[in-house]
Image 1: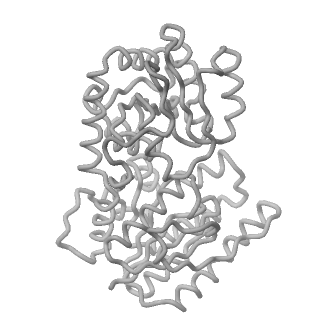
Image 2 (image 1 turned 180 degrees about the vertical axis):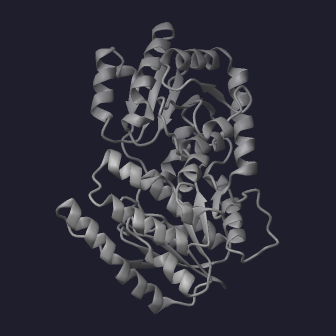
Image 3 (image 1 turned 90 degrees about the horizontal axis):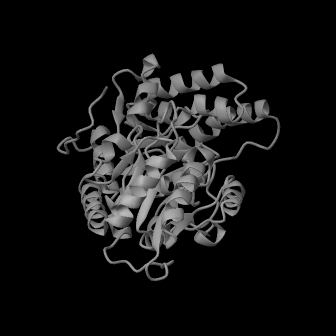
Amino acid sequence: MKRIAYVSADLGVPIFGRKGCSIHAQEVLAALVRQGFSVDLFSTSTEGTPPANLERVRVHSLPRPPRGEPAQREQAALSGNNHLRQKLEASSDYDFVYERYSLWSYAAMEFARDSEIPGLLEVNAPLIEEQAQYRILVDRAGAERVADRAFVASSALLAVSGEVAAWLQGFSAAHGKVHVVPNGVRPERFPEMLPPSRPAPAGVFTVGFVGTLKAWHGLSILVDAFARLHERFPQTRLLLVGDGPEREKTAADLFVRGLSEAAVFTGTVGPEEVPQLLASMDVAVAPYPAIDRFYFSPLKVYEYMAAGVAVVASKIGQLEDLIQSGVTGILVPPGEAPALALALEQLLREPTLRRRLGAEGRKKVLAQHTWDAVIRRIVSLARLDLSISTSYRPL
């Protein structure tokens, strides 16, 4: 049995949590296990109980930087590389190392290089820019040096989207190593004819959203579009699955518009609850605003499609490639509530179209974007099985 070290030193990724990044990590780990690998997990965020399908994963907890000033936390996170290297060397004997890129971690990729085994680095976002823009980054030069060290030592860099791949091309150490590997789904989570957990009253059309309630998810655009739809078709409701910093603002916006009774907030839910909540929707939306650098591979949209729900999404970034408008979903200009409202009205009026889009979207995702297929491509990039072909070519 081949052994893999999976590393995540990002404090913002609780491996056994309920965030989108957590689900991503869990699905990659579970797919590795299903493919017959023995997996060791090294992470700074291992709180909680592993799901049943990860019980065989051996968990190695890494120290968390103490609370304090940002500069001190950055230095503490940087010093964590010594501990991680010692942990990896003590376990050793791996066939390859797979790491989720984080700002201050380079030890895993250097361990892989020095051990003469493949080191694959999964890059989900341009973290340096993200940290500098949305949070606090004191030592940007240090973060760039860490990125260079990790990229130089890696065998391959797995970008979650073309936009992330383009960011990676700004590092000379990344040239010739970048592969675009989008997100996926586990089909078993989304069986057909799944009963809804939040069924609507008879005759009520449900518009749904799943995700952390943050401004960049376009919640204000969604509320505006739903208000326009509800004014014309009162037998409609808005189902918001998830929680986050925009909940109070979103609830207040709905209240001012007289829509509180037409909206349902579920709060935070576990991944096991999502499929039946999707089954409670007639349409699922991803109403992103016009973001200059949209580098995401939205897990929610893959899951919407896997559930067979008709999708309306902003025409932006990777979504333009994933969704063929009018065939596997509907794309609308980002940030334009009137266009979103019109698309929702069309799907309300045309149930046959709605069912066709849902069925075609499900067909595409289950054929092309499963986690098992993602892992087979990853294994191919690790050169453990060169007989497995991949459509992801170095940029």
